[in-house]
Amino acid sequence: MKCLVVDDDHLTCDLVERYLNQIGGIDYCLKVNDGSTALHLLATEAFDAVFLDLHLPGIDGVSLLKALPGNTAVVIISASPDFGAESYQFDVVDYLIKPLDFSRFAKAVIKLKNRTAQDIPTHPGHLFIKDSATIHRIDLANLLYVEAQGNYASFIFEKAKPILSLLTLRKLGTLLPPHFIRIHRSYIANLRATRQIDGNQLDFGTGQKKLPIGKSYRDTLHEKLKVIN
Image (cartoon, rainbow, N blue to C red; front, side):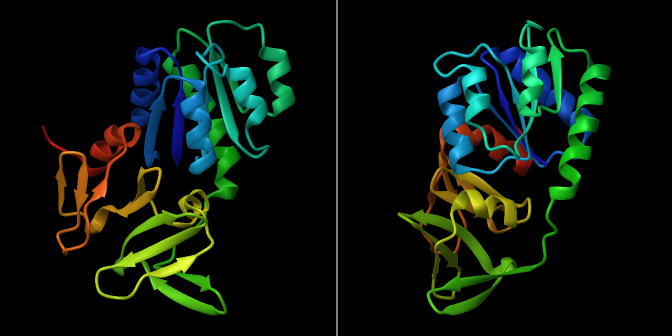
């Protein structure tokens, strides 16, 4: 399950991430501190769940909630109960009051997993992608990364020629298995093919170009790679 935590309090973000790791079943957790960044991420990447504070700089949580697709699973985290009754008009999964208690948080995550279980896709070792009039089989073991190129997504392999598709990276985030992770607004990378992180660049060690790593994706990438400091 891929989660987005939106809260202007860094300590709350870290606490939610720690609780999620204790509960388990989380592929990765991305944390942001303002509504504008959250809205951008939600427009470009698919998340199974959003943990949302209501009082945010810029775009507030209520406005963000109204902008979310109707099928987005949301758990509200707030210091105030004032929006509690109204929030369920948006079919939120749960409404948690700060300070967060682990047992209460765990109950919310159980509800969340029950809500999203029917939507979790299976991940075969391949995808069939349409390119113009041709349908290509893409073996995921051979796929290095996917790059957004205007209205297209380009599938890049170590040896085979690239394949173009009209699929968006956001849509691909729901189709690819968890070891394919968004590292930049324009790139999804195969972590199993990664050989080196050089500063803010990801290197496959195959002679392909190094991919930039976006600032908001860096921590999640390091956690996913289980980097030892």
